[in-house]
Structure formats: structure tokens, C-alpha cells
Image (cartoon, rainbow, N blue to C red; front, side):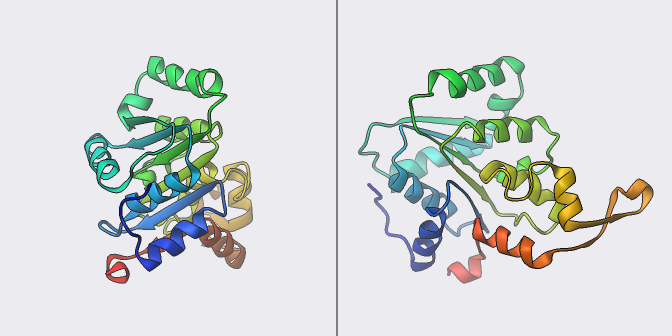
Length: 214
């Protein structure tokens, strides 16, 4: 049961997110992204709620859960920071095994805070989070950084929340949405198919500034 009333803009964002299995909340600090995520969790009522954040964020999420959400359904909570999840091969194997085998009979909701940390598709954090996302029933990404300021960064973020909506591979995404040039055609020199990109981007995300929230 949600203990905190949502503001009108938050209700709108939550309702929009519930139309999809994966969604991104892009908002500046103090705009209430965590409350929105917990409202989605309350609506989904997963058997397993996994929240990934930075080290300081684990304590903050514990406080947010206590303040905003009474879990009145059978649910196991796991709060873990990026380093504990991704740094060591043994830990990565442990989580992958649980997602692939131990928890197959459970509905899993994966919330990823500071989601801009996965934008580099080749990083261990990005690969690990995206692989677990594909094994989860519902996915949320929270970030204060919109994923389309550097358009190439959007691919890994959306490969987590909604795999395939921006093509299955980065190379296909670049061919569809980026004009490449420079040395060996590795530099982004422009954009294309802008209307399609913006439509998909905004369908699977909600963004708000602090001024708008106030």
C-alpha cells in the first residue's frame, strides 16, 4: 500500500509506465522519482523486488521504502549497489544463477537507480544490468540525465528497459538513427529519423525538471 499521495504529474507518469513492462523516469533531484518507482511496484506487486543503486543509495532506498510503501503482499526485497552486483565474477554468477534458476517461479521487478551508469554498452555494469533485465518481468530505470542528450547513449538504456525498441544491436541503431562520419566513420556527425526516435523515446519514458515538479 502506498503511504504517500502522488502529485498529479506523478500519477500521470506512473499510469504511463504501467502500459509497458519497462520504463524510464528521467527527473532532476528531488522530483520524486523513487516515489514513482515505488508506486509502480505497489501496482505490480512482484514476488521479488530488486533495487540497484550506488552505495549511498542503498540507505536512501531503505528510508524511502519505510516512508512511502507498506508491502502488504508476499514480497522479498533485495537492495544492492552496483559494485557488489557487478565487480566480481563470483557475485555476477550468483545473481545470474538466481535470476535464471532459483527465482524462475517468481515475478521479478528490477529497479535501477542512477541508470545513466549503464549507458556505456561495453562496461561490466551495463552488460550485467541488461542481462538481468532480460530475466525480469518488469524493469524501471531512474536517472537525472535524459538518455538522448548524446543519442548513442540511449541504446544501452533502452536495451535494458525495452529490448529491441531501438534495434537489437547498437550497429543497427546507429544505421537507423545516426549520421556517422569522421575517422573510419566512427564519429556521430548528425541524426536521422528524428520523429521516430522521439516518438519511441517518449513512449517509454517520462521526464520532469525540478521547476516543473514544483
